[in-house]
Amino acid sequence: MLYMFRRNMKSGAAASAEARFPALVWTIGLEMVLMLLMGSVDTWMLSAVSDGAVAAAGLSNQYVTLGLLVLRIVTVGTQVVLAQYLGAGREREGGRAALASLYLNSVIGGAISLLLILFSGPLLALLQTSDELMPAARSYLIWVGGSLVLQSLVNGLTAIIRIYGHTQLAMYASVGMNLANIAGNAVLIFGLGMVPALGVTGAAVSTCLSRGLTALILLLLFARLTGIRFRMPSREVFHPEDLGKMVKVGIPSAMETFLYHAVQTVFIALISHLGTEALAGRQYAVNLTMFVTCFGSAFSAANMIIVGRDAGGGRFDEAYKQTWHSIRLSLAAVFIANCAVILFREPLVGLFTEDTEVIRIAGHLLLLNLFVETGKCLNMNTVSALRAVGDARFPLLMAVISMAGISLTAGYGLTAAGLGAAGIWIATGLDEWIRGLSMLGRWRSRKWEAAVLVTQHKTAAPAKGGVTAAKM
Picture 1 (cartoon, rainbow, N blue to C red):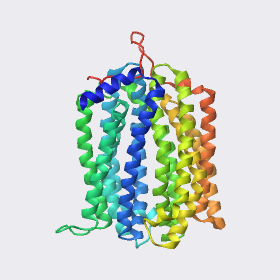
Picture 2 (picture 1 turned 120 degrees about the vertical axis):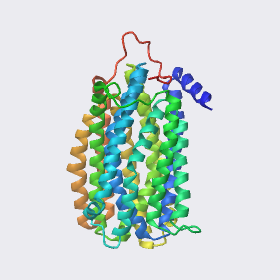
Picture 3 (picture 1 turned 30 degrees about the vertical axis):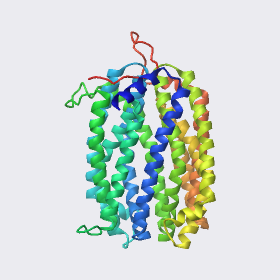
Picture 4 (picture 1 turned 135 degrees about the vertical axis):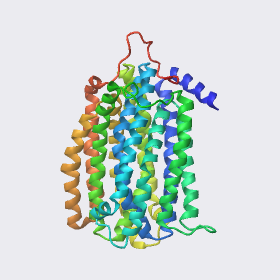
């Protein structure tokens, strides 16, 4: 099997971007759909306990998500730098950057885990968490947040393995983690034999255990597939040039995404005042919306890999055309997926709850997703392309203007006007379209060509779009 994947990676080096793109989208998209399906099973299991259990997990996950966003400083920066190094034919430098990113992710992930464990109560209080939900939410945050150090390794290793061309193996590892999580949920949430029913805490413990198992498997795959040898942290591993490039892309990217989720956290606090039904309805709508979002995300992630390699190899025209190709296909896919969810919205939400008010709220939000998700799809594709070439500051600037200046204000005003959770959805859609159109204009201007981080060595052979495993 290992030989087959290596052979495919090398043969892909000579293939055009158009030939490689569908395979990347399919593999990444299938991984995302399966992971989301399993995540929905996770939510469904918690909903069997109560809607309050779902709401408690949703509140805690806001801080878990924010913790993961901090880790994006390293993860996104590594993806961009590594793809450009490999596209430029500089495999040794790429391997060095990959190893450094894993060490950094581990340190940062450990610090975040400790923070969430120590301050779980005060952090949840900031979200106006009710006394009814606080015990379950705090237990969930301690376990799931405390295992972020393991998730940081999983995310970093998965990203690196993808860039090296092994997208199928990354998919298998991710799906395996979720299967293990579901099996653990079945035992720990509801109890089995001598194992007591732990409810929300059981779901959190299962997540922690599955992350640890997956991190171990990915570490073994990383060492075998890339050929990179683990070494003690040193100046040779933490090369200043690599770190500077990672930070140049990673910090603006992480700040942009952090701002988005910070705004969403404020919105959740607003929805919390509307009652548990509104909060649960929002959570169910988000869970179903993720299936639509994954279409745009798959195209975006695949496009980022190809554009990064093209940029590193100096193939700017190919990168430019490839992104337009990705935008057209992803918008069509997201539109069709949205229509399908809208058509069956009530039966889909009914899989999670029998509460008619929760079903009504979630169904109304899903109707608005045709506006929100098409804008998000355009935004994701153009932003990921700009990041892939190293142009990360402009997206951050527009994020500050649009999210903080427009989305937050509109969301508060529309909610106060009586639109409830729907007002939040409308405000989010406005932000996605404003930023998406701005990013599209930036891509058309081609000013991003001056932002490329890596160039080919004068003595290096022309990059062919592929790479063999780096040795260190």
